[in-house]
Length: 405
Image 1: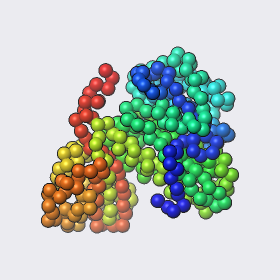
Image 2: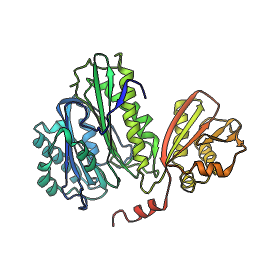
Image 3: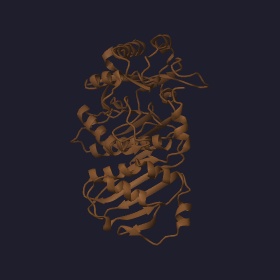
Image 4: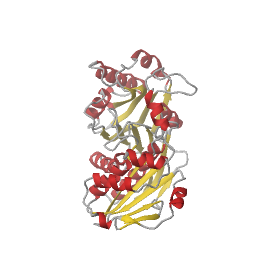
């Protein structure tokens, strides 16, 4: 991490100046202690916005509406519900998404067109709008409401996922904060995940959008839990300029620094999503080096991280490196088997494509840790890429065999 970037302990989406948030329980999800399922994030003044959305061809109307509105120069905030995806419900879905934004806009005092909407949860179920109407007024948006917001967007997550940092730029210090949800249906090209990022930097809208796309490509699009891509995936970034600093665009001296900070936020949240993968016990990090292009390095890393056999191998702490080679081979990237080197948690086990002398028990012991790192050097070029996944356990099958019952 750059010496100019400093993590904010306990920080989240309301750490940057001028952002308020809150959450409440509306009855969309099953009642349990501390449960929340309806939330609002709002900027005190209009903010530039960038957005990246699911690539699934089955799309929630909540995504359709937000994708249309995110092209505006400025917006004020977003309303989010968990427990219902508002997807595959016909034309009613768009009507309900529009009403959600109308109710939120009235509550925070802004125009309906200035509010986006996100939903997550069960597909094929209509939003219980009577409950939303009855309870949205209970949301108290405040500087201290970031944690409630992070809790309210969770589905099968075991804990809220939050991050914030400060960054020195020309003339002032800016802050970025974020919150995300997701524990399953996670796969490159977005996932069953929502992520919301805020900054008090003054960022030009086109640069904000392109910076988000780059950050997502290196983070959220490099994670995998189970190979499925959701209908509701959304990453939004809001920049309200309340830091008072100079405007940041592609030509600014601070452009690279801002992109690094945004990527750091996205990567931190992305890793937390796979770390909390349903039933998972271990985080898998796959680093592919020596590829011909960055795109090929990332593709190979994703193929390995998403391999069911590799995931099962990690769960059993089985150093069956042939499964990694199989996943690498099926990726279709350009490499020569006779040049490949492979490491498991820094133990060199494959050299020039064949087994390198190692103690199997030592590798098994090295895999008995919360994070497993595979490094694959193709020795064909200068490009690298990193992907993250998690092990596949019996608990994942149990959880998803009865998700709706």
